Structures are given as C-alpha cells and as structure tokens.
Length: 154
Image 1: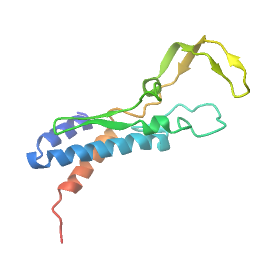
Image 2 (image 1 turned 90 degrees about the vertical axis):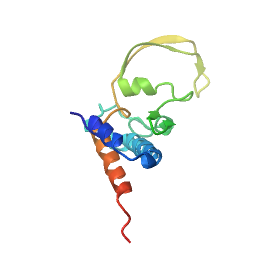
Image 3 (image 1 turned 180 degrees about the vertical axis):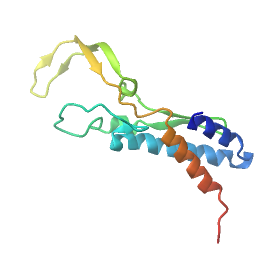
C-alpha cells in the first residue's frame, strides 16, 4: 500500500469543517516539496542524472523559471492540483518525464549578431522528475495536517 493511498484514507476521515484548511496545507506543502527538489537534486529519494558542467546556475536552475512555474491551479475540498510550466516554460514536462526525439529550433540571433536559421536537432533529455506522487511528500503532508489538527495547548 502506498503512502498516497494512506494519505487519501487519512483525508477522507477529516471532519468537514477542516477540509478547506487541509486543502491549503496540502497545496502549500506540495509546492514547497516540489520546489525543494531543485535544491536536493532528487525526487522521492531518486537522485537526478548529473548534467554536463555549466557556466552559470546549477543543474536545472539557471533562470529559476521552471522552479517558479510550480503553482497550485486547483485548491478545494475535493482535490488539489499542482502544475509546472507556462508560456515561458514549455519544457517542464520534458524535464519531469524525460524526452528523446527531434525538436525544431526556431531562427534566432546569437549575442555576437550571428543569424541562425531554423533547423532540427536530435535531443535526449534524461528524466529529472521534480513533480508527482512521492512517499516523502505524502508523509510531510500527513505530518503537517496532524500538527494543524492538534489542539492548542496554552
């Protein structure tokens, strides 16, 4: 039995009056966990495939656009949905799931003024998952909810 199945049963047992707050806690915890994957360079205990040496930034973090695109898109008592990617970050799925295939490179101008024509390129991008179901995330959500539900001792 997975931790997410345990978490779903746990959430089903929560009183109705705390479900709205619980959804916010789930969303906040998930976004933090997913963004922290970029610091840990792993997901649910699975390290990312190392990259080639970079001149700027860190593995999967150069502009922070990918990491910052992780946001909750649905938060309600029935479900929480966290998404990654946007118009600036069309490559989120390819990084999260891995990609192998041909891509079209649109024409552009290099910083030295050289014009580059449209062309295709073969790409092999290893899977470096940063979003999805994770046992560690399920445990973190359950721990936060337990803390939230504890009666305040004053």
